[in-house]
Every structure is written in structure tokens, then in C-alpha cells.
Image (cartoon, rainbow, N blue to C red; front, side, top):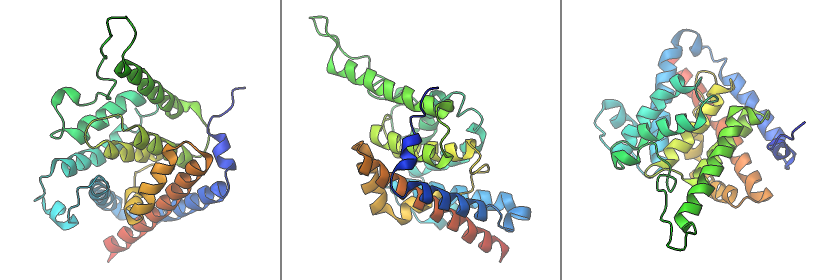
Length: 265
């Protein structure tokens, strides 16, 4: 039988317990009594706060109440709001057509920030490259193929190429997309959305209520550092990122509980 490519990640020091602990926090948060009668209100608030957090992580910081009032016209923030609102409707398609969904997420996130002909098109994969007169492929063409191969590998994992915890898969999706930055404009918004979509589509967070992006923002220096460590591809770098991601999920679960408490008061 083929080896699960992500299975060794659970053997990294402290990762399996961190994943189990985060899953317990998620399950506990999803039992919050506010969700019984006010689930829609809670979901809307999680979506708003997640979009504001993702925009801030991209470098576009806005006051939440100004966003709620509709006075913020920043296109990155508006893109993050569109993406957050679209996630529940993309959950079924994500494991069946990951590349298509990534293109959709980028189109939603980057509208108004990049030219229309770049929406949904990975770069440098959108450029076929220039073939020199000697007939050898250019550096741009080689980069195109390398990027496409990485995205295809990631899509294969999302489409059922691994059976590890959804949390680990979401972390890898997030880390890979941050490392590759395959889209022009707010590519980080796409990476964070794809990770949340993984949690949603795999059933760990079936209603998209865990505010993971708030966890990343609460520990932003760690988020940036761990993402950079993941991009090195070393065991220590990957471990650092997985530990951060599990912590961010725990914090996201705590934010859900806080939102639930606020709704009930």
C-alpha cells in the first residue's frame, strides 16, 4: 500500500499531543449552548472577525466596528469578507476540485487589487515563459512547471491523498500556500481561507465556526516566524509550524466560546 506522505508529521516531537488537545478544544467549543438557538448569529460574527483578522495579517488593519458599519472600502478587506462568506458554499467542491476552488478564492480575494486577467491565475504559471533561441526553456518556464507541480501535489493531498488529522492537513495546506504565494495580490488571504476550508470540508469544523485566523493574529510574530520556518522544509521548521497551527486552532475555539457568551448576554 502507498505510504501516507503526511503520516510522519505526527511522529515529530509534541505534535500528536498538540493535535489531540486542539481537537478536544474544538469539540468543546462546538458544544456551546449559544449554537443551539443562535448558530446563524454566531457564524456571522465569526465570519466578520475572521475576515478582519485575515486582512490585518495581510497588512491591512481596520477597526472591527468600522467594518461592521460598512465604512471600510479597502479592497483587501472587502476581498477577505467575500472569501469568508463564500467558504460554506465551497466545502463540497474543495476535495473534488481543489485547483478550481483556489482560483475561485483568489478571484474573490484579489478583485480590485490585481488586474482582471490575473484573477484566479497562479503566477508565474500564468506566464508561459519565453523560449530562448536555442530552444531551451527559460527560467520563467521552469518556475511555471515547478509551481504547477507543487500545487498539483497539494491538490492531491486535499483530494484524499492523506488520512492524517484534518488539522494537520489544514496546517500543511496553509503553510504550503504561504510558502508558494502562488497568486498575485493578497495571496495570504487565499492561504488562510484554504486552510479554514479544509477544516470545514473534513468535518473537524463543519460549520466554519472556529476562528483560526484570530488565533494567528493573536500570535502574529509566532505566525510569521513559524511560516518562515515551514518554508525551509526542515523537520524543525515543519514542527514549529504545526505547533503554532494547533495553538491557533485552540485560540480560535476560545474565540468561538467568547462570541457565544457575548451572543447570550
